[in-house]
Amino acid sequence: MKVLVIGGGAREHALCRSLSLDPAVSALHCAPGNAGIAEVAELHPVDALDGSAVTALAEKLEADLVVVGPEAPLVAGVADAVRTAGIPVFGPSGEAAQLEGSKAFAKDVMAGAGVPTARSYVCTTPAEVDEALDAFGAPYVVKDDGLAAGKGVVVTDDIEKARAHGYACERVVIEEFLDGPEVSLFAITDGTTVVPLQPAQDFKRALDDDEGPNTGGMGAYSPLPWADPKLVEEVLDTVLQPTVDEMKKRGTTFSGLLYAGLAITSRGVRVIEFNARFGDPETQVVLARLRTPLAGVLLASANGTLADLEPLRWSDDAAVTVVIASHNYPDTPRTGDPITGLDEVAAQDAPNAYVLHAGTKQDEESGAVVSAGGRVLSVTATGTDLTQARERAYVAVTRIGLDGSQHRTDIAAKAAAES
Image (tube, rainbow, N blue to C red; front, side, top):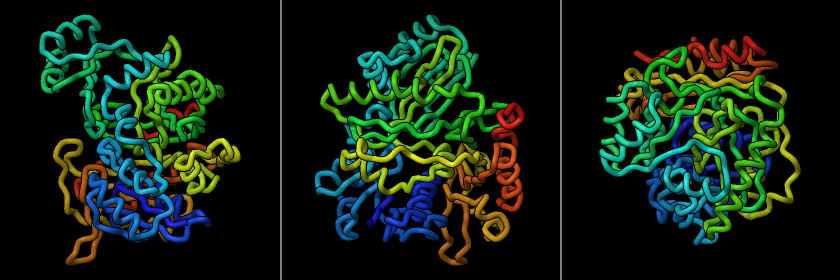
């Protein structure tokens, strides 16, 4: 099988790593990719948002499967263009990807499907914003309706900050605050059958102890020793399957990866948000534990044959990923700094720990790997339990050199201590 992955972050590196280990994959390509992905896939320069360019590349490579990683190309309809050309593609249509592209659309689908979620208001004027903030009170949860690369949500006790974010958005969803721990649960679907993956937890705040601003995610771990063993089954029955069924009923079949961001509240499971693609950094730990070869699962989603698939096989091992971010992230990050220690991790820590590249590129003059984004690397490790996986991840982190970089030191610490 020839596979083309679209994207260039750590999520795509995790996907490419798993696909490269799949015996069924004879050729692996990625566009545009990054310095780390180049080690396992052939890279191609392409505008990931240009459906016709992606399709032309897939046709030229004679790809048997195209995997669209990030949300922006999905919302832009890149999967539609590839699908129209008759090439199997993993990822929802542009219309179906509005589950992530519009918070208001997602709320409407959840209402139709009877999916439990936070009460909310959709606001388009300052007066409506003020009214909604007054109705709910602190802590305020204010979400830009559109795509914002994981940074469109403000959760604050400061009414002025909440108001400022609400006013700055063209359309904004303001909702009640959901108490309790958060869980990310991915499911692969072909529009009818829904196959849940293992749950993970990520860490959105920039600093230890969940301090600092929201980011795209600073680390993750799986499994969740504290979670109810029936959680996946419950979410499949009350959230994932009803949502997929509702989308089909509306004539907007959703196939690809449905990602439910959940709060385990005192009143039960509630959906915080949906995403239409693998989440980053949770993908790094979920795929680290998946034993079933990945390509066949993604192809079954694309071809509508998930019901014929054997149950997924999982490792009993735990996985932890720690994100190394650029100086000044999540504000305007500094880029172009050289990264050292990558060869040392590969030599001393593999296969139990390895580095997945997010914002990196190869410097054209020196050939060195340099930073090229806010989140630069995901250092991922496995172990017999979370304690061992954490230790291995952080040992590998110490080998990495990146001037001014930052990372959290408490990823999975609480869960490891309690398990």
